[in-house]
Length: 140
Image 1 (cartoon, helix red, strand yellow):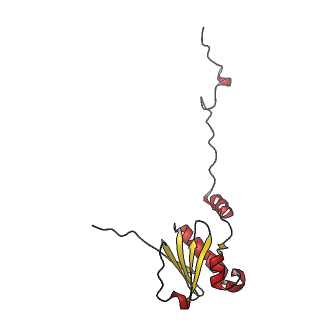
Image 2 (cartoon, rainbow, N blue to C red):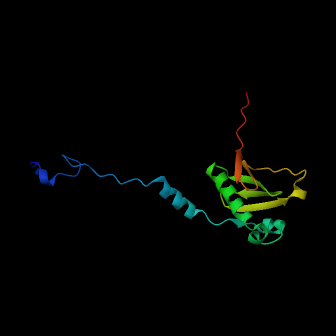
Image 3 (cartoon, one colour):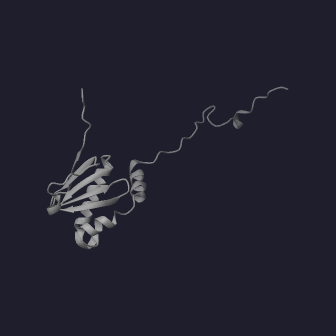
């Protein structure tokens, strides 16, 4: 059986002068858009709702947006379990699940120890959140 050479006009793509077209990569902005769509609305555990004394949107008002911004900043820095300090209150948040696990008011915060957190966000009055990540301690 003889192998015949195909005429140049029927050559597979990428042979000769033609180039194989690569799929165009999406911009980072598109990825961020998809990611923010995938992140569900901030939720509060039953325990957290009891601790803050009512519906979060009613109790926190416009500060709810500051809390969400603090959680987003922790997420961007790789935080998974975050302590958010805001307005004499502390919120322990599962960033992965986008859920406030518990809330502690100023009176209960004294002599309290927060465990199993990997980051903390301190929300200032007007300027927004600042983030400090726990860095691994190097032991010789």
